[in-house]
Image 1 (tube, rainbow, N blue to C red):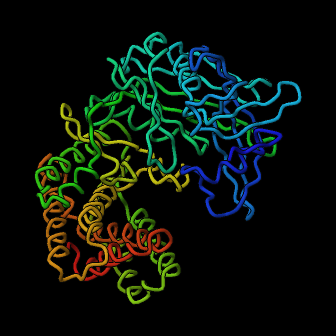
Image 2: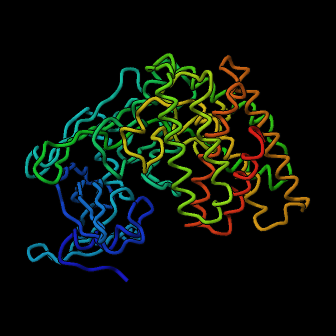
Image 3: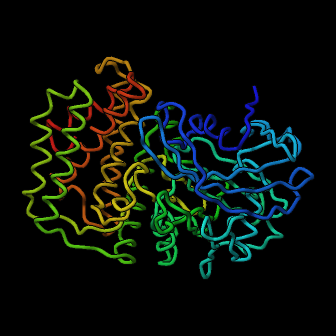
Length: 480
């Protein structure tokens, strides 16, 4: 049934909790307040008529008092568009204009084309009430991907990718000569988004392991309480690689079809090391001193305590887990801190027939504060994330099986082979072998596994055996 309301904000209060990128799921109907926004110009070419293209900056507060700022583009049309029915937010009864049909802008070509027109012109946009309530500027890097001409994208088809948790990505002109992907950042935080900064730095340094940037939209939006506006990235546009497949799909198909994945894992390890080495050259690094080790250990210990408090099944591992975390402060040496991916797993990598492995989504863990996601970290954290991802790829199809079942044994062997090959590939590229830092690697893998135990307990209880088994193995030996 189509939702009806007297205002767009009233519609959004019921619509937001159903979106994958909304962070307050399960907390009830939120309070939605408009902080400001942007008005973009529609070229009138989508679905035979013009639309109001309104990018809303919203302060959304859940009933338990947790607030966040969201970017929500919507299109408003005087007549319904059957092709956009799945993207309908609802109908607003406007006293002056009659019934207005409101759609999720990410699914409406009118919004996407308006954004790309802005990028092509390297233009600016404002709120209808003036720059104080919203302003944006489009930026294209020198030598960036695509000609960024409005004519090239004016009538191109658009397609929203599924499966994303915190943003919305839209493929434009997938079959054209210069296909691009537009990533719209949904949760806004003041400061430069690492997904833009890191990928741009890698591309500028000549790396072929990231999609080449076409440009981005940076914005200024009001904050509650009359403080100075926040500034940060609103959207990022880069090349789209047709025919590429994500590594998670390739790995899980190999498991299902009882095929090895060692060669691919080796090449992925090499690609990962290549990116880490390039980032160390292109961006700042910092030696790890005793204070830094203490800070890392303290963070790991806090994760142990949080996880054990959240999941009673972890209580028998408390002392051993705390010992593994605390051991970090006593290591003799550690790699320099540097910019890293921050949320690295098989779902963050694509395989291209022409380019090999391509790394995506350098935002870091979306729920962590932006200041933490942009801070230098251990590259070993990315390595640990990928090792855990191999374990998930191997074991997701054996959930519920007895550990001695031949399929479970085969999955464990598959994961072990991928692990060894990935680490070999990483070390053979000129980067330091992660196995030289076994204490650190073990602690970081354990940290990830503990997070996974809590996540699975809350979201997929039948899968808890995957990370719980990893916790058990990691606390028996440093390298499983």
